Amino acid sequence: MKNYLFEQKAVFAFNIWSIDSARAVIDAAAEKKANVILQTSSGVFEKIAKKQLREFVSSYASDQGIRAWLHLDHCRKTTLIREAVDLAWDSVMIDASDRSVGENIAATNAITGYAHEQGVLVEAEVGQIRGAEDNIVYAQSQIASREDIDRFLRETEVDMIAAAFGNAHGIYQSEPQLHYEIVEYITEKTEIPFVVHGGSGMTDGAVRRLLEIPNVRKINISTDVKLAYREGIMTAYKNGLMERDGFQAVDVEHLIHESIGSMVRSRLSLLSE
Image 1 (cartoon, rainbow, N blue to C red):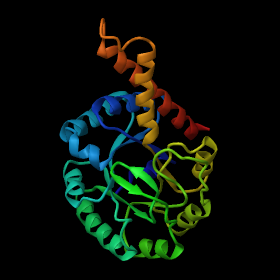
Image 2: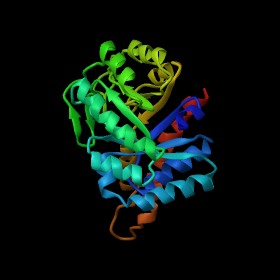
Image 3: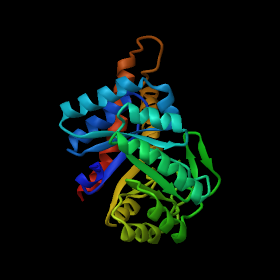
Image 4: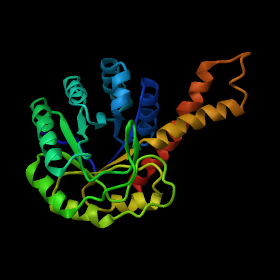
């Protein structure tokens, strides 16, 4: 089965929640002539018009001359993962990292068997990445151990692997202590693409260093997309576009589109350095 992450050195994955947010990311990616992954969290996936989003992403990205893949991020509900597979999401993430490594492996293998039958790739996680992602919250990270990594790689057939190496979801309260040696250990043990979670808030220097590690192929950006959306709204407010008299929703949406696009272009620029 072909893994789309092997088609380029690395891909940024941006969380989206609507057709408009997807369009903002795709437009920015097209300007940079970069392929991109659009991620839906499990909470978003439950709320959106799934079939319509799937059709839009495929057709609009094609029109813009790039590839855009749909990924279901951090999901613990088997029913949702199977639904995403059935709707032709390109990849899914089973997050059983809150369980023992044995239970994590069993849950991962159950999903992998189902997804691979339909040509859908599977991502899984070793260790627990702290912070908040949708409704999944960890008080602190549990850095992935080499023993658990070895067992997970030996006993699963995942297509992408994430691991806790000091990274976090959400906003970093201070500069994270990233254990690059964990990433290097995994990428030296396997050709399976490594996924960096918690890319939002990482310095450009940290991202550059991760991109220098062979087989780091996917870097997730979620919080920064939401903050860019917020910044677009705040700019509209400061510019007087939120006043009741003469209010035009399209003008506000344009600023949001531009704000998200600016952030996406900035991140994608790191790929061409």
